[in-house]
Every structure is written in structure tokens, then in C-alpha cells.
Image 1 (cartoon, one colour):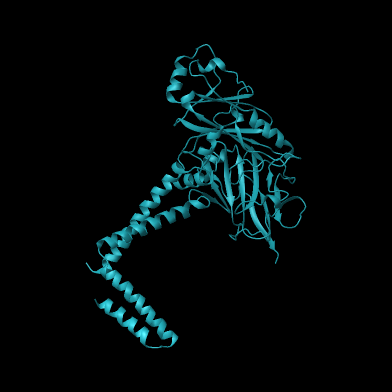
Image 2 (cartoon, rainbow over the protein chains, first blue to last red):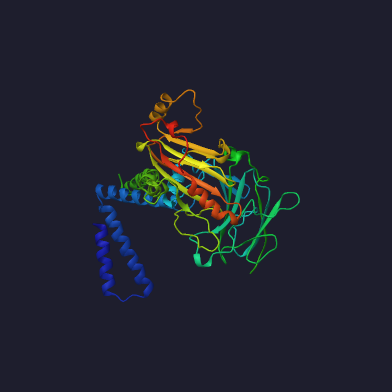
Length: 236
Length: 203
């Protein structure tokens, strides 16, 4: 009853008096508040049940979509700048990984087949950016073959395909001590040069180890056994 | 109960409900997905060799866009063979070449078996995917004097698919890697004859 009176008074005031703009706004606010309060006060049990159902369904569906629309939200092991995804293809994978695989049509590497490691940040924790130059090098965990791939988020434009988007362990140029350095940047470099796939924006690296014994014991890897990612500089 | 506490109670109920909806949705996605690898691999069921879903670019010819893999490894050719064990045990045979080859067997829940060409005996790798009943049958009818070199795998489910991956270490090996995927044979072992009777792959 109280709210109804307030609404009516608000309406009468608004109609009769030419108030300054801010006062009119305040009146409108009071009117909306009054209407809401009235609705809240007069809502029955059914209204609350409907509200709870609608909010629950909306929040649940939205959060499920959010958690499974990008990369794997959980299940990775962090090793330095890299994250190893050992269990995403296994039968006992977590439900989020399975949902992500199903939505993307991904066929993940099985445990006995290989291991996927990804990196979206460099060794000092800064996001990998296409306008910077990076050196990736050092050691790679034991594997029969490995590939290092660079990519950005989203689909690749087939017209603007970069000259190279990956290095394999066979084609890499090594130094005398069997180590290697890959330089990633916009400008052409000597040695192992991996061009940036896009002019700007975040990029990510993927290291795939094939036929590797470490897939079963990811916990034994430490920062010295994975390639170091160092930022050399940024242009701008 | 005052309006405010009823409102708070309703919101709390909504949050609990949201949690339940979230868990149920995430768990249900693999079963309702139509664009997942399990459903898309069904297309290869009638073939006797893997359906190539990621081919490597060969100089002169543009890379065919036929795959569905979101971020494929540009140095690895991938093929899939779907199976339905109701038709009989599935035999996947590969000849070892200079390229690294691996075969993984996936069910709806994920990969339950993987093997690389290092496990090959005398240059060939023979995998037979079967149900528990088919394995018992094969064991019962096996000839004791005959050596069987098949790798027998009991599948947890009736349907699934095998994935063949061949790595091309150098771009000049791309064509070879594509051919190596096609050269793998995926055939159904006839259910009425013993599995070791047709030990030689026909591909």
C-alpha cells in the first residue's frame, strides 16, 4: 500500500511540476525504487521460486559455457613458463578437459603417444606479445621427436599464412654443445628464426613431445629441463 | 519471514542450483556434442584405411582443408579409423618406415591405449581391438603351436576410433608422411574365423 502511494505521488509530482533536470532524475529514481520495492513486497512464494530457478539456470549455464569455451581450465602442471597437459587425453581426464575436447573437436595426445606443453607467458611472467622479440632455447625433455609451434588466438587467415609456424627437432640448427636457440620476432633473424604469426596481440607457444618417457612423470620435470623463454626487446 | 530474508534465501538457493546446473552441463557436453572427434570420426567407419584429417602441405599442391582439428601440429599427419566392435574385432596394421608413427585408441571417454612404432615386431605393428567376449573367443580357438604377434587390446566400449599420427621431421618428408597414414590398414577381423588365420594385413 505504502509503495503504491509513493508511486502515485511520484507520478503526480512529475506531471504537475517542471523541476530542474537532476531533481527530475531523482524523482524517476525514487519512482523506479518504489515500483521495485512494491514488486518485492507483493511477490508471493511463487515469484521467489521462479526467481531462484531462473537465476540458477542462467548462472549455471553461463559459467559452464565460460569454463569450457577456451583452453583447458584445469588439469595442467606448471613447469617454469610452460604448462604440461598430460592427462587431457586420458580416460581419467577431468570433466572440464573432456568437455573442452568435445566442443573443439580436439584429439589430444594420449599418455603413451606424447605430451603437450603450452606457454602464454615468458620466464619473467609477462604475456607473450607479437610486437616483441623472444629467444627460446636450452634443453628439451627427452623425446624421440618434438615440435615447437607458435600461434595466436582464433582462426588462422589462410591468405596471410606465415612462412614458418613450427620447428621440428630434426630441422633445428644446433650449437656445438647440442643446445639450440630459436629467435621469435617480426624481423628476419639468422639461425633458427620463427616469424611472429600476427602483427600484434598475444601469442602462445606449444611444445609437443612425441614418444617421450616424461609423459608418465610430469612432476619430475623442472624449469631447467624445459626451454627458457626470454624477452629480448619490444619495438614501439 | 521478512521480504529481505526471503530474497536472500532465494538467492542462496539460486547459487546452489547454479552449481548443480554447472556440473551437470559440463559432464553432459561430451554426450551431446555433435562436432567432437568421436562423432566426426564416424565418417571413416566404412573405409579400410584411415581417414586423413590433417594432411601435410606438399610442395606445389596447396594443403587440403579437410580437417577439423583446432590447432593441429603442422609437422604431423593425422588419420582416424572408427570402429564398431559389433561388426567384429578391429585390426589396425602398420608397416614401420623411417618416420615416427604412433597409434592411439580412443573411446568416448578418452584414449585408453597408445603405442608407437618402437613396439613393432619384425617391421610391422598389429593391433587388434576387441571386446572381452571376443578376446575370450580368440584365446579359446588359438592354436598353441602358432606364435601370435598381435597386440590385443580390450576396449571398454563398443564404439571408438583409432588415431594414426606420422611425424615428418623435415618438410621434404611431408608427402611420405601423408602416404604412411594412408598405408595403415584398418580392417574388421571376420567374426567366424579365428583372429590368427589372417595374420597378414591386406593393406
